[in-house]
Picture (cartoon, rainbow, N blue to C red):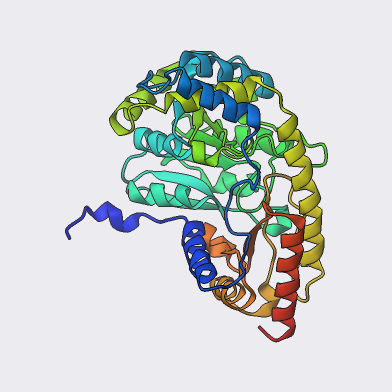
Length: 390
């Protein structure tokens, strides 16, 4: 089968590969604790579900505008303006089926062969995958435990140059749970100013999931950078709507027109009834979101305390999202080997840190989007395996 050479450069999300193997083991009668997948284990709030059902019954089952339904674009503009403290108009919003299309469309629009793109590593694997697929040089910006998995601004300055066409930010981050604070954001803004041809994609999909009173900060408050900034956000994580496939990008109106062109060519539009549910998500009660975050916070403490109690394991307390990224280096095994051992021998599904880039070696990612009893069961099984000598 003859395929374009770029296909050899595409990566994947190993979370789905591990999920498939875990499901196979379950079919064989094994009990598996799922700490590998990055989605809330809560149901979509009932008011959102009802809005989606009502939309179906009212006939919101046809094509809509490629950039999104006006009602949802308006609601998103209001939400982003309120949470980021900036002026946003609906013509700056493009609604897409999930968050990934914004990544894909933006990179298609601004990257060319031979240019460079800087991305967080460890980071969401699709960043590096798409940069490589488009024939660009993927330049990792390491996220280090010593810096609480936040981007090192001084190091970033050494990575940017006149060939850099895109900088990707992610806060709170997947897989590490690190957060960029106000000083980080200001430092990044300063580092970007000498490079006016560098676009910025700020992946803020976990923007509502912060802990310990932290508030989300965004590069959007730097007015001089807004024309080349794209905010990626969506409904999957905040509202437990992963299967609804509903995300969006906020950008300059001029760029939104071009991103809409790519949407027309790729997906036509986002499902209309899903978008109507999105309106309810943003404008309806937020009690379920608050309750979910409180529960994540409780689980965060359980899993971090439990991991730090394991022999030869250390784990920082994440500041956002719902992942931990513990250090297993003392055990002297490659992260991929540990991923396999934990699944096959302990019945605990997690991900090797290298699923998120080379700088993830020595680490594993656990999602605490599971119940406290299941988290405690996983920790007990891992302890038994470690004590048996792995």
